[in-house]
Picture 1 (cartoon, rainbow, N blue to C red):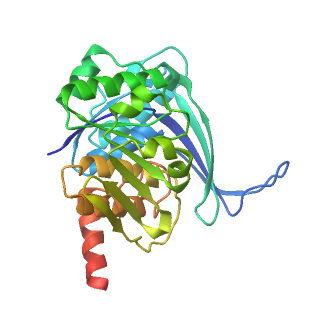
Picture 2: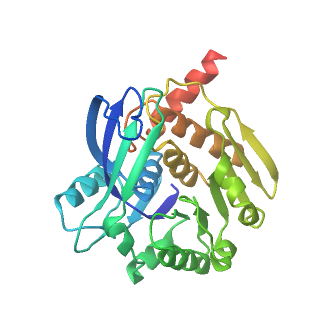
Length: 287
């Protein structure tokens, strides 16, 4: 079994569904509202765990009621949350609005995510893992610190550079791979050229992986989209969980995880390995 450590953000998400997004100054009537665990780091940890990896999440929550909600949700998905720290103040919060086509608008309040640090215990967990998965919703210093610990131990370092920002040369040099969408690949062109493995999500067109052995493409899976929130995170977590597989197979499974996530509401909708198996078998049968 692959072991994955995710260092990143965790939020309480409030997801409101409406037929269409309001114009500035306009009020529209919503269809539903739900609260649950979100945050790019936590979403990716959930996906990695549900994909079959032994997964540890390193992050921070506040001293409020939301902390228990998000940690219980992660633990329920099989994620080890023993290295999550509690800080004074609020847990991260995200206000997510989803329209009738499944597109979303998101406002994030970082809260405790701004206090994430990499402890000595977290460094030990990273050293013992096969893969370290990172994003950019926590302080960049913590991202670099975690990547240093991974490189020193020979742990694979994967970064989903979202939200996009300028990356220090030290961090880029520590990376084994980046997971980007089309826009991120364009915005970070200089970075992408320097990283050994580049995995690009292409929405409905599938995904592409470029590495030392060449380029692999996997087509998109036709699904009935309900909510795209978290689909990219599900892809990233599944990719990390299956990093030990040949590039074509890990890309295919990650793409299936992302597609299935888009068929359910909320960011924490990553499928299990069995659900991905059944989905892929159905795709083969339908050919």
